[in-house]
Image (cartoon, rainbow, N blue to C red; front, side, top):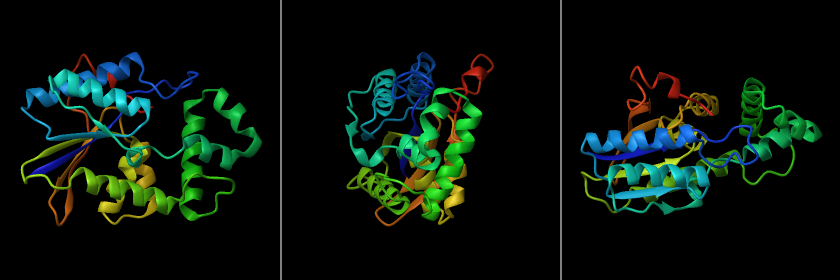
Length: 224
């Protein structure tokens, strides 16, 4: 079966001045995933990623660790929603102070509430896209990545947790709350397998981290 591997980027630099780059651990997570794919004998016919640096770095590290000559094609359709825009719209003038505190649990609670309001259409303020628009571009990116390939092809897509959560929830025809829960539980460098054909897509696995499930890497399982 043709398979789309939806991969969340490695750990980013939470609370740093520039979140949009992989931490040292995030780079290792991505390399370990590439090594895992190589050990399984997986060969990618196509690789894609978003235009965010953490997504590009993840794709490069995976492919380099596999010894692949592919270069991931960058497309903004794979980008994450704007967390800063949602955060600011939800908290108003208090958003900058809240983000500066670097409280992971507080950020988690706030972004979850902001996502719910966004999906319900009640979030006020200038936003770069609607919830419906976000879902539409993820669906289009998934369809494009899988187009015109043989029925045994493998495709790598390095993206983000929100994009994966929305894409999978829509495949399952699940409500917005499911997309939000899938988003916030997705692990860094985790992946989903989606079987695809010209007629359909079917989820096979979700949030897999076999490259981290060993005794010396348990502490490398992260969510940020």
